[in-house]
Length: 336
Image (cartoon, rainbow, N blue to C red; front, top):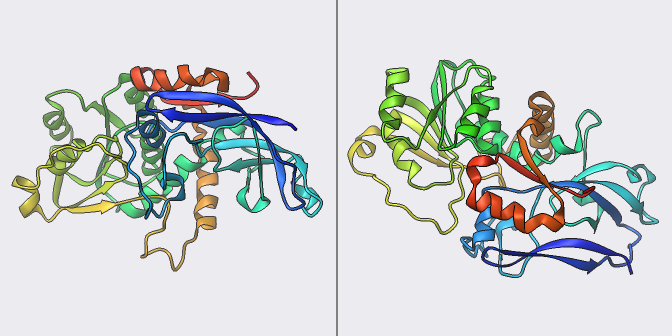
């Protein structure tokens, strides 16, 4: 029986690559051989560190019922190598995306696969989940002509969100991150300035740059304490969009002072659902179409800083855990 190399999280900060059997292909299934898969430095690192909550009632199937050991991941790109008898032959040889854990090959029904536009490389296509998240964040934020906008966190989702926001006619677009590598990447986006959120003077620096507070702030850093910066830097009747999933991380949030009298709106944004205000006109298919087009414009594979074979998974996660300042996007390359 053929096998696949599959990554398993077995305990906090422990991963194993195991040979798993590939079952016989059913008539309505396809076999995909993986080309690359992207590691999520946010959600996936919570799983790696054992910081994830148990979300049996979650709307997000990817984040529900998490218990060790588990195969995890949701950004796999591959080529269809074999099709079942009932599957349309057009699927054969097609480049596809799948929300599937890290594995060298896998079997799925075609309805679980998303064909990749011919104009995109596999590496760019790996960014689809993060781009869909960025599209969702911008839709929930609903930026307005001439607004002053702050994006906290310039990991992959932060960079993608900033790239989308840079296409709007905003007055100001400021980003912030702890890590110089990510600030430099943000500064390559047209019209974007980036500040060091790790400095004690960060709030003063932000105000000094704009001479105003921000109409719209997006908290994408993954650090719940960053909400205090967001509250302090957002103006009267402004909006704060919270796109980070904090898992079990906790921090004291200052809802006294400026928050209480400022009528600031806190907006929870999560990609597994579509805002009720949009769901009458938008569905997942339409949002994916927007995400594919955005990937074509932005070409985010330039932010891939490290490529590992799946056998080197332990090194990849250790790097993200211990030296995140040296990374932006880490991927598994299955040709290695």
